[in-house]
Amino acid sequence: NSMNRIKGFIYDLITFFASTGSRNRNTTEKVLIIRVDEIGDYLLWRKFITELLEASICNQKEVHFVGNASWKSLFEIEFSEKTFTKIYWLNKNLYKTSINYRFRFSKNIFQEHYSTVINPTYSRAKRVDDSLVKAAKANSNYGYVRNNENYLPYEQSYDRNLYDKLLPIHQKPVFEFNRNKAFTEWLTQSQSLISNTHLDDTISLPEVKTKYQLPATYFVLFPGSRSAKRIWSAENFTIVSNYLYEKYKITVILAGAASDSQYGEAFENNYTHPIVNLIGITTLPETLALLKGARCILSVDTGSIHLAASVNCLSFGIFNGSQYGRFSPYPNTVSNKIKSI
Image 1 (cartoon, helix red, strand yellow):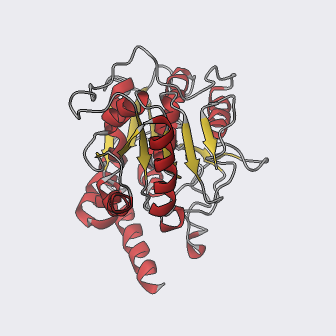
Image 2 (cartoon, rainbow, N blue to C red):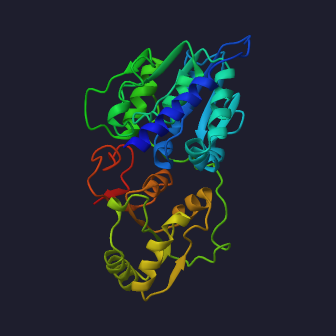
Image 3 (cartoon, one colour):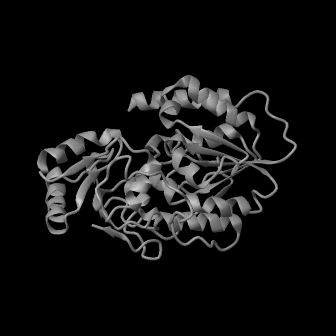
């Protein structure tokens, strides 16, 4: 696709110009950790942050972080802004569409003058996280020997000499949590003590029961996905929801991002029992609270499964078989509440 190639060329030029000129003169070494993939990816990685920060590679150094702005509110439930010396929240959409935003963001990363960059993402993206690694121009870059999921065929040489330390994956498929654990152990040179993705019980979640006038017993249905290949029909969801209401008197609550509203409407057109539609209404922390109080969730393959796992909620996930073993089924050791169909 020639349009894609032109866009890629413009991105490369921006990175080139952003990573020239003067830089900070640092008195202490600075390390940058980059994690900018989606909500589910973050949820399966976040608990390793503490161990990474304790590693000798980060110890006694200034550690900065680039995160995805879309899950900033989830990060703030568990971590304070003091977890890292400095945090950059990346708006991925703007980074891909605004030349000015892309240049400024990359320039800021370059000027920090990092000695080390750590990118724990397996499906690295040439146009996002690898562009940031390139802009940083650090002495040493740590990453995974990636797969090709986010790399176009003609982009393959982009990261050829970008990383000087790469962890290879010999066994496939690997459940993503276990992959993150392996990467952490490789960097820390010690055994990880993290065994699941559960949110600590001491963490307080927002009050949702009265705010949204929730019924006493309910289950949560996530009908939408950004990928059409992952969608399960409204008719099928209706059959299962009817069963749950008629047999157990559990009310359905629709949830998801605002972009899922078409799938919610399709379901509402089919369903005749009581319903609460919260699609596009709840924040991510509120969604966690909603799931914590639910009897179960029913969902297509989306971040909701990983949100539910973190609050130990019984989940029935409808998967289409893509990435089998990587994001589902969950190993019982990580969570025994996720039923993958």
